[in-house]
Structures are given as C-alpha cells and as structure tokens.
Image (cartoon, rainbow, N blue to C red; front, top):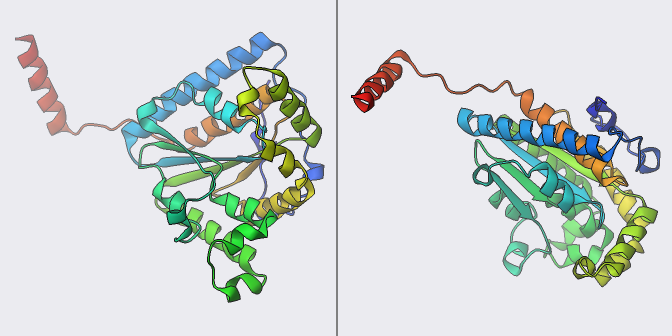
Length: 289
C-alpha cells in the first residue's frame, strides 16, 4: 500500500487541534511479514540515499522526534536508521540542560549538535522542549535566568517560536533540510505501554516514576503541542503528526517521509572532469603494470 505522507503533514499557518488528528489509522501493511519487507525496502533505500548525501557533500538532513513518553521515539530511530552508515549519522538525545547549558540561550546546546554537511543528524527530543516541557512547567523557565521583563510580559513563547522558525530558515538557506515528527500517542495506549514495562523484566528498567507524574499534565502538554505545531510548521521545515498507537505503522510512515525528502533533493554522485579522469586512467595503468 502506498503511504500518502501529505496526510500527516501540518500545513504552514494551520491551526492544530490534536483531537482531530488520529492516533491510529488503518495499517499500511497487511501482515507482519509484509511489514518486515516494507521496512527492509525503506531501510535499504535510505542507506543508498545516505551514501549519496555523503558523496555529493552539498546537503544536510536534520530529523527531529518529539512525543510523549513511550510514544516510540527510540524504537523509530533504532528501526528506521538501522541500515545507515554510523559514520554519516549522529543521534543526539536532549535531556534536562546542564548548568553550563543554562548559562546560554535556549538554542545554544542544539546548535552545538547540528550535523555537518553530507550527514544525517537525529534529535531525540530537541530545542522544542523549550516550548513544550518548559511551558508546562513554568518553574523550569524561571531557572533559566531570563530577565524578569522577558518572563513577565507573556510573549516568551511567541518569541521562542520566532527564534526557532528563524533558525530553521537559516539552516535551510545553508543546505540543511529539517523534518520534524510528532509521534501522536493516545493516553490509553501510553497506559498500556507503561504497564507492559512494569510487567516485563526485560523492560522494567525503562520505567520512570516521573512518567506517571507527567501523565497528570496531559491536557497541558496537548495544548502546548497544538500551539507549537501550528506556529512552527513551515513549507521548508514541516511537522508530521504521525499516528503512534501502532508502532510498526508509525515506523513505516516515518521512513517513507525521510526517503521522500532525500529523493527530492535530486542529488548526484560527483563527476570527474577530464583531467581527473585522465589521472585515474594513469593510476589504473600503473596498477595493472
């Protein structure tokens, strides 16, 4: 079945109401075997495109994953990027900022982790945490040491949206393509996944009591995501709201979007000029002699 990635893309300037976006859609695969074959094709194609991205040395890809706890960010990264050369791909996971990071502006630590040209960078959570978790927990904003006037004027979130959009436009002008995935999980499905972690000895190490506390803020998080997705999805750095209750379906959607994005770049392997080609012929002759 063909995946219509545009169905999951947030249009620039759109008003987002997450209750209108499904957390589960009919699967694009019919059987488990079909899923494995589709994912294998996507992974293989992505590996070829990543090699081409590196060889052409003109573009960069930055892939951002956001979502509630247990939404499947780690699993999507693990499965979708399984065939990519580790030398050309780097994953950065953003947790609570360090004391040093708090002494800088909110984008500083993310800028340090941006991928170099020809590579794929993956942010597992990102600078978007600064308009999501920080918005839900205002005490985190106060800990960032902003001038009182900047916190009290009520415009801090719109200002941060503007800073984020400006950064992503700058990156695009420099050849970095940004694609962003919000793994849209239902609260009921999250409960089942948390219970599964508790009941499975091989997964219980993943369980964090703080995840239960955060469930109490679910409505506030949905409000924060709605504002964020609507304000920061642009034509050149779009958000995709991926139904995440079915992990396998979500991985296929994510991989299809990444493959499509890279294919649209129209990359080619470098072509040698006549002089360079002649040098290679000389080297070849010397090796054979």
